[in-house]
Length: 416
Image (cartoon, rainbow, N blue to C red; front, side, top):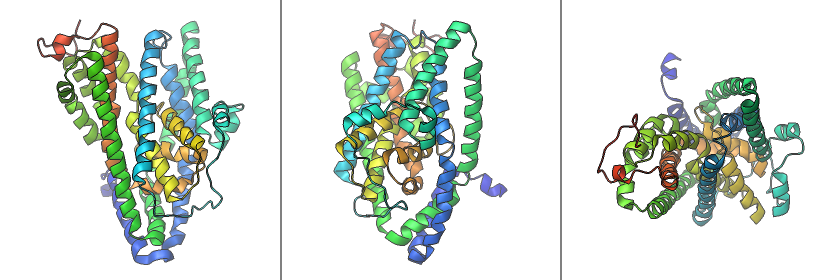
């Protein structure tokens, strides 16, 4: 057990995925009963996720001061939301062009699952909860996130008015406790994923491997397009050389890809934003930490592609309004991050019931999630720095001489 504990969870899941696929291919449909273990694992993952999402978003927004939620904060928020929506839309587009899940035609455990087929008006009204307790009980992530945004804003205003941050401290404590539960459950992920994939491979054979390859290829194309659009937009708006701009974000992008962690990439991102991009310390200190929580263009493209992937795998019929809901949910679900191994998988699993999709679909992507994370963390990290550059230029806090290498500054001293 001690030796096993030294192996990263990602490696354990990857090994378990290979074993599960192998068992399924060797034993065929005879191994299907093992899927019960996988279903128990999924239920354990889902049991506290609505509260985790509620707490994460509330803490992220409630921890901002009213001044940060003011004009500059609003500008930052708009940039993050717009880029995330575009990323989610790109994900949907590529998923329908490449169609990574077409060909498997599986039947979910819940045989009656279909798309919601609601009108656009019904979906918009459905964003807003009439009873947050009912929304939590039903696992309606869209309504939970909307309520959390209001609760976070109200918490920020209350702290500013009374100087009493006890509620925010309570939320932070609850979040840490819930994340501990998620962390405990995620330790069982290798067993759960092995069981789920063994059942899937037992009924589908080698075709599942081909679909996973197409799934990762779809994400790769989505990430490439997002980064190209980022570079084109920022270089045109700030009037800098796009090739030089690309060179300056390579170190933070490599850090993001190798660690698959926005948090671990934060130090080099903040340092390079000041010393290479020429952004002031004030803008750097506000945009980049906020971006780690609010800006997840890479995660949005993952959530949207993964959702369409599962729709195609299980041959679920969806309407145009359902696609809009996928884009919106993929955007809102990026508000607040789960600081546990497999956090993106937990968020993805939480979206499945809201979209009317089978939760067991998460097993398909779990085995290759490290490779997915290596790709999608890049726009999360580099996107923060590029948005910081745009905002610094708009606020007259961009030092062009630093960007062009005419002068040097240290991150500690800033560009002023």
